[in-house]
Image (tube, rainbow, N blue to C red; front, top):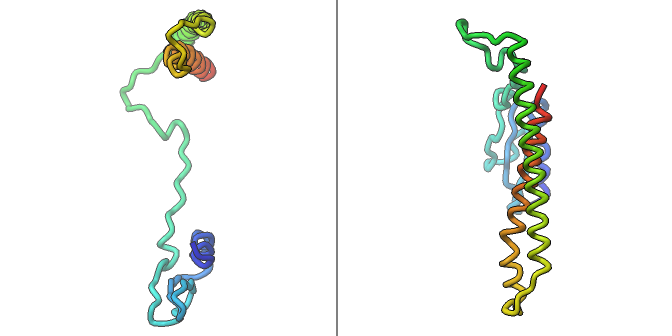
Length: 155
């Protein structure tokens, strides 16, 4: 990438505030020239006026982002707290079960790593045999991370 093209890419986002029209031209040596005036006949308008920039998005609050329809039923606060408590309890139970399963999977992997059969002189065979055990450990670790994220999202 040429220096002029790189300069163009760096300056382009801020340029509409400086000039109304930006031209991309070819010079006599075949290089690229960026200018706010037409330098020669090869110039083509790249950016014209401030209308070419996108307007800034309007900030939205949580209430306006997903407003409830007029007749949408509301849940009582104590009912929602009860549901949240139940959800937390269920997630904590799942977390405990996943941690237990992870420990079991790690033990099975360690047992398999300690076992060597005579037909595994090729180390790739050992790796192939161990891979399902490693995958199982990794799956339980991902499950624990996901449950911890869910617990963190609770109110």
